[in-house]
Length: 155
Picture 1: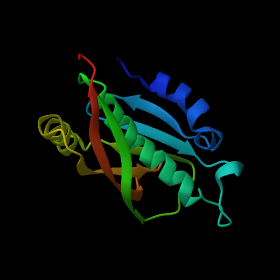
Picture 2: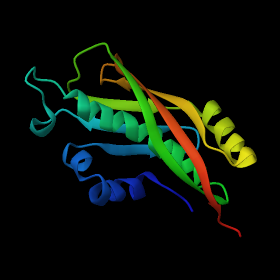
Picture 3: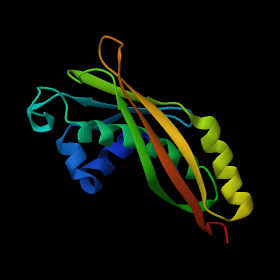
């Protein structure tokens, strides 16, 4: 199955409506990189006139999660996926358009192969950086993902 940014944005409307209402969108998705964006709006603001940290977390998680989905859909197995941990660092006030870029695929590919070989659950870390319109890093998120094979689609 081919998974595209357009398909994921449609998915967000129906399965992640709070992210959709807050303006979280997938800009680009390949096997090596996923970019998501959120723009400062009235609905996603905090009292300090910047984007609420939970909205940033939604955009950041989607950049890693979409990359996980894109890569597991490329196999002949059906996987269960789950975020089991998160760490975040904030460097600058998030205003304007914030783009999250996840291109941390080396560990992802290794973990998918390990899960297929071992038939056991595997956890791994994916990081994503939030960049503002000026090119400054606003935040860095690390998500600890767990994947496990549910079944082989060929059987």
